[in-house]
Length: 76
Image (cartoon, rainbow, N blue to C red; front, side):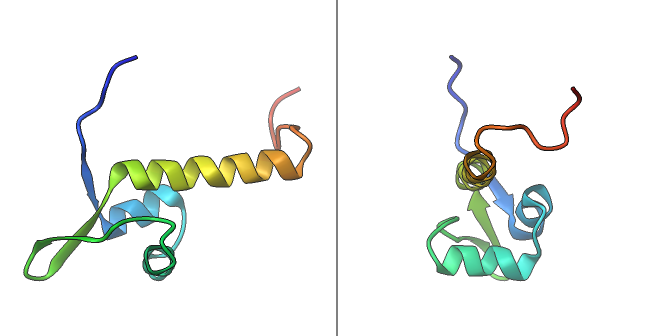
């Protein structure tokens, strides 16, 4: 297993990758589900890519558990 270097993603990029709105990303940050928010400039913020990855993985796990482990929309 290869270790990855810590990375930051700008908030709009993280929102696009998570398939949610920028407003929803900020709600998830406020609720402690993504983040922390890191100031990278006077008017610029980012979130750790690892926290976005974990949020996405949790949504996938949630969907899988709700469906009894069945894949949704996969080819037969």
